[in-house]
Structures are given as C-alpha cells and as structure tokens.
Amino acid sequence: MRLYEEILQDFGFSREDDERAAKIMKDLAGEKLLDCSVLEFVKGKSVAVIGGAYSGESVDEEIVITAGKAVNKVEFTPHVHVTDMEEDEELLAELEEKGCVLVLHAHGDNIDRIRSVVPKVRRFVGTTQSIPFDRIYNFGGFTDGDRAALIAKRFGARSIKLYGFDFESADNPIKLKKLKWAKIILKNGGII
Image (cartoon, rainbow, N blue to C red):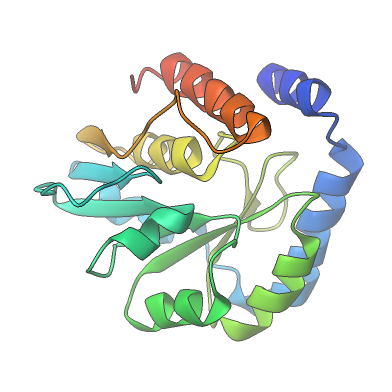
C-alpha cells in the first residue's frame, strides 16, 4: 500500500473517493460480482498483455489480456479485459457476451462510468486500488496496463509478454506521469 499512498500524494487523488467508488460499484453490482477464481484459467499459461500503444503485431501466447482502450486495436475477443471503463459500454457488454472476463476497476474519478457501465453488463470481476472487500479485489497496479500484467502474475501465468507498452510518450503530462508509475509498478512486480 506504500506505493498507493505515494501515487495518491503525487496526483492529489483522494483515498476516500476511491473507497466511495468501490462501494458504489459493490452496491450497483450485487450478484453480478464474480469471485476472482474465474481468472484461474491463466495459471501455467503463456499470457500476452496488450497495452494502448499496440500496433497489430502478431500475438502467439495462449491467453490474451487487453488493457483499457487497447481493446479497440485488436480484431479478436480477448480472454480477459482489464479496464477503468473509458471505452464504450456497449463494447464492454458485447465482450462479456462473447465470453471475455471483464475486470472493471473503480476509482474516485470514474464514478459516473461505474453508474453507466455496471447496469449494462451481466457479470464481472470488480477491483479497487484501495482496501479490498466483498468481491471487490485489489490485485495491485495503477493503470489498466500494469494492473492487467499484475493480474496475469497473481493468477500464475507461466510467462507474460507485454505488447504496446510505451512508457515514454503520452499526449499529456498527466498521462506521462501515470506511465512513469506504471513502469515502476511493473519493475517492482518483476515483470519488466
């Protein structure tokens, strides 16, 4: 949790807002919240984690996890999609209908998205970056990309290959700062 505290301080984010978002997700979702054991199919498999700078390179791994808006860049349904729900809610509902496990993340800045997306999907794994509770999990991570990679590690992936992870270029200074933290988190996790 030390890194989380540093990130809150660096961005001026509120732990209380993160916790409120997680509670709203829990209350809205109810029985839609899946037990995280649904992710155990990752164990022992080679996993591709696809980030936002993905440009269509060939992916040979057994399991594909997309992160955030990277899902718009792939022409297939990933096995798992990890997101704080910036994508179109219809797309998220469609992914879930096709058998993709959605991992939806609650944080203080996306309460409107939680209220919009949760009613439109049938089931998902819920995550928070604060204290986990009642099927709202904290697998670590800060951005969709590093959270996706940590999920692969947490559920026992044999290998993890990152596609479309560019820590040096972003369209704004806030995004660049987020990428800096993502790199630190992935290094700490032994993924890069």
